[in-house]
Length: 175
Image (cartoon, rainbow, N blue to C red):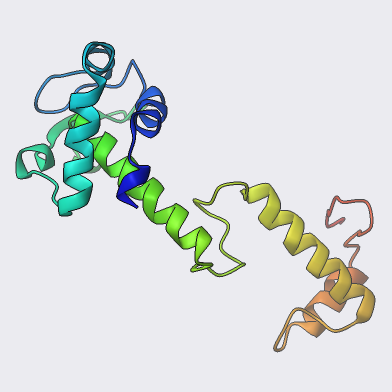
């Protein structure tokens, strides 16, 4: 897995970092890390590789800068719930986390460690794919009269009787 942490992977994931995101506690923005990347790719790549190899995320990088932001449209900001607290992490910390997540996800995909019904956070599988599978399964169940599972056959038939339209790819309950 470590051999996959190379300059190409680091550059790819660093390139996804927003130039406009606020810096963390170290006050080093993504734009600055990207400039440093152009200057010394090997140092950043080696730092990330060492973190992954040792399974160590430096404590200093785990320190978050917390910012309190008022929620828009509130008439009175006397209530604590009228604010949102966000935590800003250092860019290099987020980069190591992204690379670790990328490696873990790749490993799970290769080893088929995720259920076929898992669509979130997977490459080449989206919410649209999940809805398409659900629609296909629902249409087959309605056509065959088998239902989706325990106790749902009747409710699907009732929904069909009330005007659930199938076959067009669009489902809309009328009335």
